[in-house]
Image (cartoon, rainbow, N blue to C red; front, side, top):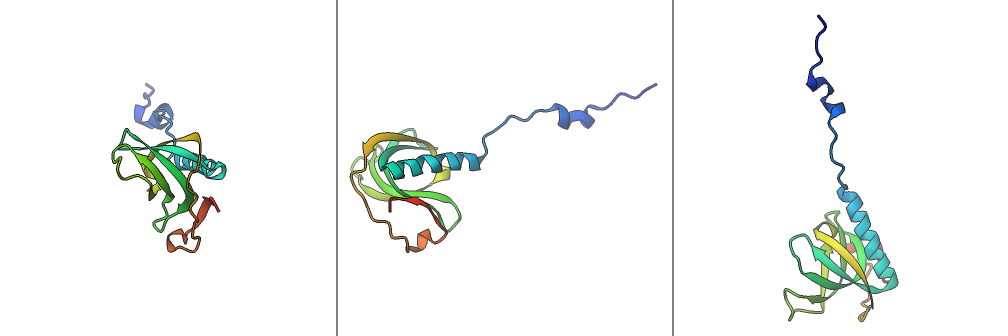
Length: 129
């Protein structure tokens, strides 16, 4: 009598894993959106993983941090959570950003990026300079 094949032998071929967008693809997408905003010098709206509120942000540089994390730095125009703490220089890791929306509003402030600053030693992806 022939033996029935066990399900475990064929499990890898039968099971389909749901296709997820890799984290690296997500970072590249955000990186390209932010570099477009920097090149066109327009404000962006950022949403973070933990927060629902949006922040209006003026991106000035995308760089690789000392911990080899992709980061964006610039001027935060508005933060609805802290309305009295506006116009502050901020840096954010791309992994913390959930969504980026480009606006049509041009930059108001144009800060100069010091390319010799130690935090940019691992590389600058794009900047306003």
